[in-house]
Picture (cartoon, rainbow, N blue to C red):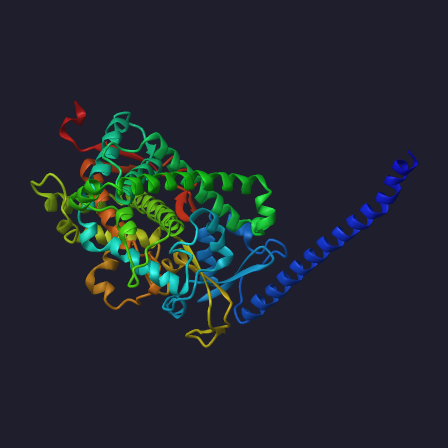
Length: 516
């Protein structure tokens, strides 16, 4: 009994020493992490010494301004105040040189510098190491293999897919239009874009989105919001802190749901492809989907994508190909409602091209000259991706003599670049003729970059433009669009450009029988 009674006495000093030792280790780790962050801040700030900018909060930097409504136009006003570039701080430790001038954009984006890991690492748990975040030889290998999926011969049959998905949406809009009140088009366009993307990526049938697919749409929407909130909130930048917060746990749950969906589709396709008859059927059907192409792709050494690479590229394509198209189409229809004279001219062009055909063909897309100019002018004012980031792999010298060392972070603010009054006269005016051949011929190649620029530009831009042309032309042939003055959209950056309150439009059916 005496021995047992003494045990706590012996254990007590040991536990006390252990807790002190553990506390010391934790404090040392925290101190080293803080020292590393302060040292990095010093390096980033010193690199940007020659670039004046707006005042910063000692703790939040410019984060409070970024999170406010109207922050995009605040960036434009700062761009007027500080020509070429200014430092942009998200919290106390993360600082970018924010650029919005064509020569500055060319100096960085004509090179192959990697995406800024301080931002794009937030995507890794969701999309893995796909084309968006890869660098070096593996990025080159993936880019080469994926290019096969965006060749014109692959894209041509997709026109019928875009038409089918768009018509399903427009039929629903016929019912909504009969209620004679405005409604938010953004969500419907999002479902339509996902429907066509699922067919082009996974070879989904013509029955539309299943419950599982609709759930996936909501999951992707949640993930984009969560990532944007994490970028804008410096307290979430540390992984350890983020994963123990409710916000971080929601993100992990959404990631798992997205992965389960992608894995389910890939497993099913691989199982189907074990059947030789099914392989032959796929080779002879109307079009190959992206998953077919990725499963069959090999590099020069005969190496194919691993399962992890497959999922990463499919998840990346679903992120980049869905939200950006949704944003582009929705803001275009808003512009058409805002400028009815351009809406009518685009409609007349589409009618003339369609003629007595039942639907548009691939060759018709090249004839849509005025519609294309209007789409580009919409992309100038409302770029689907307002901001992209890089980390310099080597020093860069800018046109005005200033420079940045390797390791510096760059934010290319496409929204501010496209409204730069030094490049675009009367930048707030909607003028499609800016993109007529004679007006566009002498323009700086980095003045208009809605799909980014340089070797790491958007690989799917032809896919996106084809879909946007088909869908918008069909929309204009079926409806007349007008604004709801009581619910004008409030611009908001959520990885892509969206609206805080949706995009509410009045629709009037142009079908003769609609008035019956």
